[in-house]
Length: 610
Image (cartoon, rainbow, N blue to C red):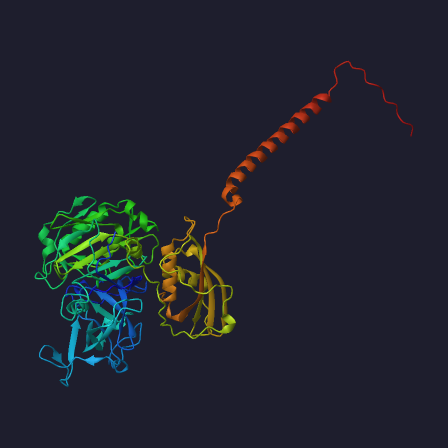
């Protein structure tokens, strides 16, 4: 029986990519829907803009009672793993480590002929190494996994890795671990398929640049009208590959042989990789074609001096208008079907220069594999139909995929449930805000135009003698929320010891009358789930209270004050002109009346006696 899960937002996360089994990954060292029989997974994530890399995470619960983890969604990995409580070398991640002894349903996978065993010869082990020199090592366990309280899917038993050693980027990343969705018997998808819980298919939909949102659908769905497909050959490579034949830039094909995209593993689609990596010849042709089509923009230095990024300044803030400046790119498959890419599918925001963007396609120097990461499929529903060996692509707004599901009679998405992983001490009662309504989260949508977003943020500074720079503080908050600095205002700031309370307001951009509903929901979600990353000197923070105010109805005077002012100005001008003309006329008349004609008798004046 196929069960159905409810949809939640999947927020875009920026950090160094580490996930996946694809051996080409690290040579890259940079890193209307029908319900059908579907399972829509509840997804959550966070946004971290402290580096140039992005990944997507989802929440997965393991054990009884459930222990929750944030896992990178990775189609290039075949193992799902989380840090174990007895880990000898694991980094500090988003959630506490998994504690097997606290789960009444946990079972170790006993040593057998089909696995590598630990030194005691009692439990199966796993090991994953990545070319960027990171690795994960641990033991295999079996326990109940689930996707959240909103899911209709009952917890299912699955084998997963319990880490005992992490190295490299796996050690330093914020996410707890990896959710492996690749081809392999330990893959979470494979295990659910074997239990006949889902069909042998799943779909991913990643939100757009700087927006986030999206969905993961475990199970089959009816293909939307307009979805394009490419054959995926599991015998060609163990990864999800497609038959890429050509790339067109601004309607013109790159002068390349189709075989350039068929080196080593072919063209691989990997959600655990951030950007796209092309073989040398293909990359140089693509880069030159983009540069030749944006001659109106100025080439600037990239955000990281260690890399020779191709960046362009002066493109503007509005992502929706990037297509007016940058060319459209088409990927042509072996069946002649095309996947059209908008600029957000091959660009990333410059983190230091506002309104500047950099090419998110790089050269794969050490491998002939063409690797397509998450950037290529932003705002694209990708169906991994493993049963029919094909991958489908459908352009859509992934951040609002719930609307499409709602229109077709699918279950309405559940609102985001707060996940409290904050360790900040409670705010002092003397700093508690007043005048804000209870935090009733708006859910899947807001039924009015947003005029202003107000929120109170408490935070604890380790050094009580240090005072924050308010201008810097505003710039940091604006940058973390993806807003213009002019939109973010610090209304009030109070302190008690090392406890601080900041009251903020976010207003629409100068070019807009209101804040979009999607933007408002994302801002509150990122604040509430502690996804705003502040420098260490600011300590940790907590969202105390918030409220969203609708766009105020403008009065007749506000709507017509310009016209009234214009009419008043004209009237005043005419009045002053008339007065000036009258004074001129009167003065001329007086002067003409003071002269007497020649010969006119003038009466004599007697001298008055002294």
